Length: 66
Image (cartoon, rainbow, N blue to C red):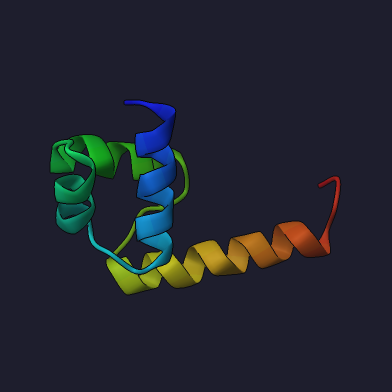
Protein backbone atom coordinates (compact mmCIF):
# COMPACT_ATOMS: atom_id res chain seq x y z
CA UNK A 1 0.00 0.00 0.00
CA UNK A 2 1.31 3.41 -0.93
CA UNK A 3 1.19 6.55 1.22
CA UNK A 4 -1.28 7.99 -1.27
CA UNK A 5 -3.59 5.00 -0.88
CA UNK A 6 -3.37 5.25 2.91
CA UNK A 7 -4.29 8.95 2.78
CA UNK A 8 -7.15 8.21 0.41
CA UNK A 9 -8.46 5.48 2.73
CA UNK A 10 -8.46 7.89 5.66
CA UNK A 11 -10.24 10.58 3.65
CA UNK A 12 -12.92 8.20 2.40
CA UNK A 13 -13.49 6.75 5.87
CA UNK A 14 -13.87 10.31 7.22
CA UNK A 15 -16.59 10.74 4.60
CA UNK A 16 -18.36 7.71 6.09
CA UNK A 17 -17.60 5.30 3.25
CA UNK A 18 -17.59 1.55 3.90
CA UNK A 19 -14.73 -0.87 3.35
CA UNK A 20 -16.03 -2.16 0.01
CA UNK A 21 -16.49 1.34 -1.42
CA UNK A 22 -13.08 2.44 -0.17
CA UNK A 23 -11.42 -0.70 -1.54
CA UNK A 24 -12.91 -0.11 -4.99
CA UNK A 25 -11.82 3.53 -4.97
CA UNK A 26 -8.19 2.85 -4.03
CA UNK A 27 -7.73 -0.40 -5.95
CA UNK A 28 -7.13 -2.71 -3.00
CA UNK A 29 -9.05 -5.68 -1.62
CA UNK A 30 -11.72 -5.13 1.02
CA UNK A 31 -9.72 -7.24 3.48
CA UNK A 32 -6.58 -5.12 3.08
CA UNK A 33 -8.60 -1.95 3.63
CA UNK A 34 -10.41 -3.45 6.62
CA UNK A 35 -7.17 -4.63 8.25
CA UNK A 36 -5.51 -1.27 7.65
CA UNK A 37 -8.49 0.52 9.18
CA UNK A 38 -8.55 -1.76 12.22
CA UNK A 39 -4.86 -1.24 12.94
CA UNK A 40 -5.22 2.53 12.54
CA UNK A 41 -8.38 3.15 14.58
CA UNK A 42 -10.74 3.51 11.62
CA UNK A 43 -12.76 0.35 12.14
CA UNK A 44 -16.52 0.05 12.24
CA UNK A 45 -19.38 0.74 9.91
CA UNK A 46 -19.02 3.73 7.60
CA UNK A 47 -20.93 6.46 9.42
CA UNK A 48 -19.98 5.20 12.89
CA UNK A 49 -16.30 5.13 11.91
CA UNK A 50 -16.61 8.69 10.68
CA UNK A 51 -18.03 9.86 14.00
CA UNK A 52 -15.43 7.92 16.02
CA UNK A 53 -12.56 9.35 14.00
CA UNK A 54 -13.91 12.89 14.35
CA UNK A 55 -14.26 12.43 18.11
CA UNK A 56 -10.70 11.08 18.42
CA UNK A 57 -9.32 13.97 16.38
CA UNK A 58 -11.17 16.45 18.62
CA UNK A 59 -9.78 14.77 21.74
CA UNK A 60 -6.23 14.86 20.32
CA UNK A 61 -6.65 18.57 19.55
CA UNK A 62 -7.99 19.28 23.04
CA UNK A 63 -5.06 17.50 24.70
CA UNK A 64 -1.87 18.50 22.88
CA UNK A 65 1.12 16.38 23.73
CA UNK A 66 -0.99 13.47 24.95
